Image 1: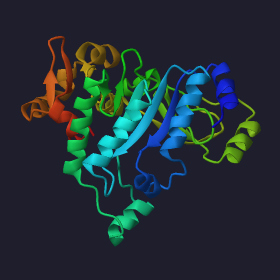
Image 2: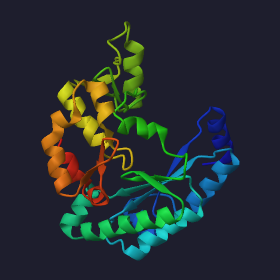
Image 3: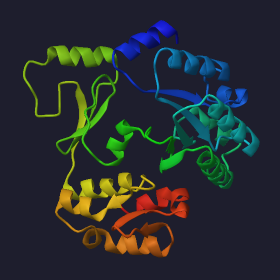
Amino acid sequence: MDEPTLRDVRRAEVNRLSIGMQSADTGELRLFARRHDVDDVRRTMALARRAGFANLNLDLIYGVPGQSMATWQHSLNVALIMNPDHLSLYSLGIEDGTPMQRWIEQGAVPAPDPDLAADMIEWATEHLAAQGFTQYEISNWSRPGFESRHNLHYWRNLPYLGLGAGAHGYAARTRYSTALRPADYIARIEAQRAPLAYPLSAAAVDSESIDDQVAMAEHMIMGLRLTEEGVASAAFRARYGRDLWDVYGAELARLMAAGLLERTPDDRVRLTPRGRLLGNHVFAAFV
């Protein structure tokens, strides 16, 4: 990245950048097959500030095979020295069919330790709070006023358009994805002669109609990711015309009894600190 390019992007009214730092450890970056090092991240952060960006995020990954608490703490502290406005901390997921899965199965790298990963995120939560960051979503922390409005839109289960090759969108109760290869996307758009039903275009390669039952379940799964906001009973009723407790009372009662959810005085449900560590267990209740 260079400063003239960043200035052009800023003049185009892009006002926020997310930079995939991932780690400050050379071995971990090599494991991810990343071509950058931590000096590249420092340089890009400095260039972005000079180009006029006042809203910068850094992504980091924890729960990495072979990662220690010490290397994780080092990575997060290196990131903090760069003075980001927002941090996204993601637990490494081992996806089927990936080289990482194959390496673990072959014994080339150790399997991730989920207990250590839990310790890592608990330490990070306490450490970032002391540095003035608020955890507003399971994987996201920000300084006051720098919450990601773009991603908040997803987590509130609101509509968004997917534009461009390989994009995903959700609007008018339709979820869709577009052609992955840019050449295919362009050819499909240029061949279109008439409008399709909103929000679809000729570039859409897959679409699904979302009924009320699926929409309500996704509302719970996405909304409960918001650690402070959670899911408000009044908003649920306004959107779906049904009472939250009538629809999901049994599931909510069970999760509250397990100490994973709490009910606030203004009738919201949200994850407890323990629930944040077991989010997937909570979300599974609504699938």
